[in-house]
Length: 328
Ligand code: GZL
Image (cartoon, rainbow, N blue to C red; front, top):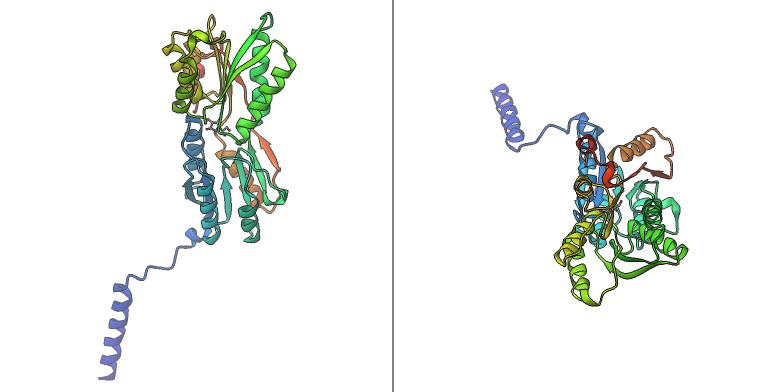
């Protein structure tokens, strides 16, 4: 009788556990995944979407990662909330594409105190304690700006006066600061260059179209426009739409619209002659970020700053082969 009761109890206990859905303990493999907490700026531009795609292509479970991806929708406060959540989740690494440079000391100190390395990607953060950032991967935005102003210097070598409209990117972002400083330095060095208007395009087509339309509405009282210096491609699309709406011609014999990023659509605008120059800013940063993480996983110290190689394109550079070869 006792044996029967024991057998019955065993069956009962097993059923209880089975019905309670007690899953098997996590498989070893899940425990082996490197957990990445990633805070992305938003989805404001073609460049940003290519950057996000590059990260999601690299940080997959097949490659040994669990990616916790958060889109900050262009709000720094959302990045702080996401980073604090990553800390609570005890991720292995925090990867942040900071919207602007200031305000990061406190939240990055919390990550450091939790023993979680922070990798800054694309734009930079300005912090008092350099050790809060394990590594930075991105672009040299001042050098990008110099490529544009060097092109302007050549194009307008014999011009008496060069009137420039300057459309800035998200104020306080490293990309805006670097590209703006390069233009300001070139204007100081070329006394016949004049910035006739400076507007905030926030790296978007819509905002740029709005501010340019407003400015151009007084067309009859405006000075000649030689150059529109847009701090990314999407701003250039908005500027060109506004200029053409007011009867301006963009291109070799008209207004020189310049942009940064050199995403696919910008190369097509260039090929059509509407964009005079687009300076490349490489968004495919996923592989570089992964190499930093692999370096740290092996116990080594990564390079503090890694910049990607970049070039620039004019209409005569654009071939069908080039367009076919572009990954973004
Ligand atoms: C540059 C990046 C900028 C791009 C814009 O690395 O931070 O932000 O130039 C994007 O297109 O919005």
